[in-house]
Length: 497
Ligand code: NAD
Ligand code: MN
Image (cartoon, rainbow, N blue to C red; front, top):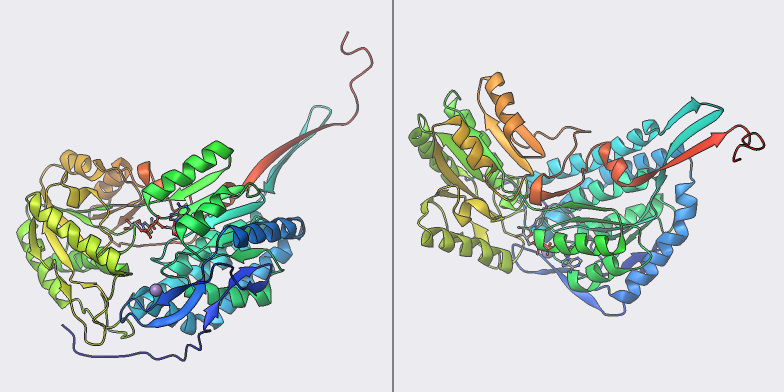
C-alpha cells in the first residue's frame, strides 16, 4: 500500500437545504427534505428536497410552458447556451468534484475523468446540433422535407454512481434537440446536481431544465406517470428500467433505457502480463466497482492463467483503500450500507456456489470513516455460469475464469443477460477485431478499458438497455421525424374520376 496522503480541501459552502429547482427558482418542497450524507463518514452534508406529486406537477407544467420558446430558439443560440453550460461547469468543477466525492464516497481523483466527460458532453452536443440535418429533395411536381422535431418534455431519471456524467448524458442531447427537461437525480447523490442547477439558473431560460430530487417510488414514479411528459429516459437497475419501459409502452412514449452490465474482459496469451494486469485492475476497481461498464468477468487464457492471477492478486493488494478526499486513494466507500451489504452478500453467495475467493472479500475500516463500506478489491475464481459471474455486484470485485478455446470463451462471454461493454487484450489486431465482432456488447474496448471517445455511441445490447447516448444517435432518441411532401399545385381537375 502507498503511504502518501494528499488530502484535498475545498471550501464547499453548501446550503443548509436545497429546494426543488422549478421554473428557474428553488422551491420549498411540501413533503420536507432528505438528508444528504457523506458516504464515507456518515456526516450530514445538507438536505435536499423530497419531491412528490405536487412538485412534479409544477415542474412538468413549467417545462411544458418553456418548450415553445426553447424548441423554436435558433440552433445557433441553443448551441451557444450549451457552450456556456460547459463553461460554467468547467469554471466550477473543483468545488463540484469535491461535493460529489463526499456525497458518493468515490475517490476524488476519479472525478477528473467524470467532469472531463461531462464538459465534453455539453460541448459535443453544442456542436452536433449544428450539423444535425433532416433531408430535403425535389420530387415530381414538388418538394419533400424531412425535419427533426423536438419531442417536448423529457422525464429523465438517473442513478447515484456517476452523477455529473449522468446529468450531462441526459441533458446535453435533450436540450440541444430543443426539448425541455424534468430531471430526477438519485436520493443518495443529488448534491452536485442541485449545485449545478444554481449554475444553470444563470445560463438557461426559466423552465428549460427543472430538477426534482426525491425517492424513486415518490418523485420518480410521479414523474414517469405524469400525463404531460413526452419521453422517458432512465439509467439504473434492470427492475426499475423494466417498469419505466412498461409505463412507456402503456402510454406509447418513446423511451431510452441504460441498465446494468456484466462485461467480459478477455485476455489472450500473447499480452504483456504486467500491463494487462494493470488494465484489468483499473477495469474492475474504478468507480469503486459501482458502474455498469466495469470489466468484472475476466477470462484468462490457460497458458498465462497462473501467472496472470498471481499478479492480479499482487496488484489488488497495492490498490490504496482510503479516505475519498485523498488524491492517492483508489478505492473508497461504497454509496451506502445497503450497497455494502449487498456486495458482501454476493461474496457469501459465491462461496456457497463453490467459487473461490482468491483475494479480498472483506470490509475494511478507514480511520475517521468508520461509517463507510470500504471493500477490498476482490478476486474470485468462478465458472461463467455461477451467479457471481452473471449478476451485477456493483463493488470492486472480479471473477477469473480459465479458457483455452476461442469459440468457447466467446460463448462464455456472451452467455449473460447483459451486453453493455466488453474488453479484449491481445497484440494480434486481427484476432481482436474478429473477437469484437462476435461479442454481444454495445462497446468493445481493445487493449484499453474505458476508452471513451466523443461521438461514439454508448448503450446496451440485450438487457443492458434500449437506445444510444453520448453520440449523434442520441439526437435521434430525442427527436421525431416529420415528413412534409409539398406539391406545387393541386392535381388537375377531374383527376379522381
Ligand atoms: P435504481 O434503479 O433503484 O435507481 C435508479 C434511479 O431510479 C434512482 O433515481 C431512483 O430513485 C429511481 N427509481 C427507483 N424506483 C423508481 C420507480 N419506481 N419509478 C421511477 N424511478 C425510480 O438503482 P439503485 O437502487 O440505485 O441501484 C440498484 C442496482 O442497480 C445497483 O446495485 C446496480 O446493479 C444497478 N445500477 C445500475 C446503474 C447503471 O448505470 N446502469 C446505475 C446504478 C445502479
Ligand atoms: Mn450521499
